[in-house]
Amino acid sequence: MFGGNMQKAMKQMQKMQSDMAKMQDELKDRLVEGSAGGGVVKAVVNGHKEVKEVIISPAAVDPEDVEMLQDLVVAAVNEALRTAEKMMEDEMKKITGGMKLPPGLF
Image (tube, rainbow, N blue to C red; front, top):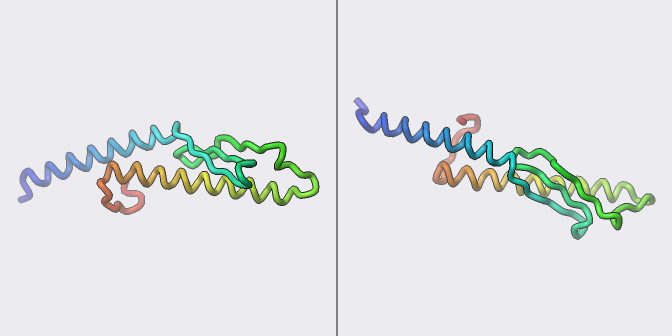
């Protein structure tokens, strides 16, 4: 009924699935950074959204204001996570040609 078109579509889906698996594997080694407080706190996150490092400048450490330092760490981590999410979306668009896929399809 579908002839070669169905077979072609299946091969394209298999290639897309393979490309996505490869991309997922590569993203674990790609790092992005988020910062807060003018760069006194930095967070490094990989493409799997795992925090790999938090860097705090001594200038950010004020024993009288620990709450500010905590806020800066949270802000830096959140920025890094947003950057990692965007990186993942951009890589996905390269593979899917911008086609929106339902979550969990791959």
